[in-house]
Image 1 (cartoon, rainbow, N blue to C red):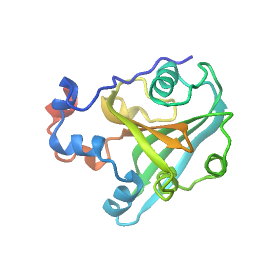
Image 2 (image 1 turned 120 degrees about the vertical axis):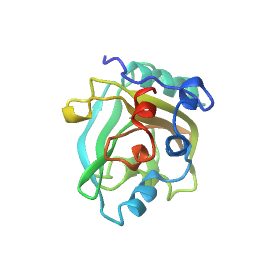
Image 3 (image 1 turned 45 degrees about the vertical axis):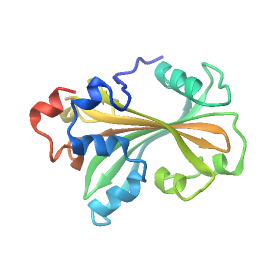
Image 4 (image 1 turned 90 degrees about the vertical axis):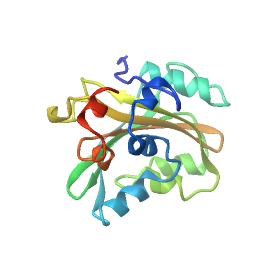
Amino acid sequence: MQRSQYGWFDVGSAKDRRLSVEQRHWIWDQTSLTDKLRVLAHGDFEVQVLSERRTLPRQDEQVFISSTCRRGVKRRAIAWVREVYLICQGRPWVYARSVLPLGQKGALTRQIFQLKSRPLGEFLFSHPDIYRSSVQGGEWRWPLPSKVPDEFANKLIARRSLFNIQEHPLLVQEVFLPYSPVYQHSTPQQSQNI
C-alpha cells in the first residue's frame, strides 16, 4: 500500500493560518470547483482521465473514510479510484483523485462509474441528495503520482472532501497545480512555507 504524501490539516490550524487569504478561500470553498474553474477559464475546461480502476485505497484514504462516515467501511476494501486532470485553457490546473468503496448500491453510485470524461463535480452538485460532510486542507510533497510531470515537484496546496451519496462515502482529493489561480496572489514564501 502506498504511503500518503499529504500533510492534512483542519481549518484554523497553524498550517492553515500560514496560507494567504486567497489560498484559504480555494481550500475551504464549499461550492463546485468545476463551476469555479469553468468561469475562470472562460469555458475552456475539460477533464482528462488519467486512470480509472478498482484498487486498494491508500492507508490515509481508508482511515479518513472510516473515521468520518456514518456507515462503517471495511479497512482494506477494494474501491473504484479515478484520477484526472482538470484542464483549463490547455493546461492542467488541478489533479484530482476520487475514491468510492465498492459494494455500495444505488442508482447514483452506478452513475459515477459511467462518468467517462464528464466532471465528477458537475454530477455531485446537480444532486440535492449528495452532500459534503467533511473537508481538510493539505500540502502535497514529492513524489507526485507517476503521471504528474516533474515540473510540479514543489509543495502544492490540496484539499480533500468526503461526500455522502445515499449515505455512502465518496472521497474527493484535489491538488492545485502551479498553473492554477490559487497561487496567483501568494508570494513565493507563502507557497513554500505551507
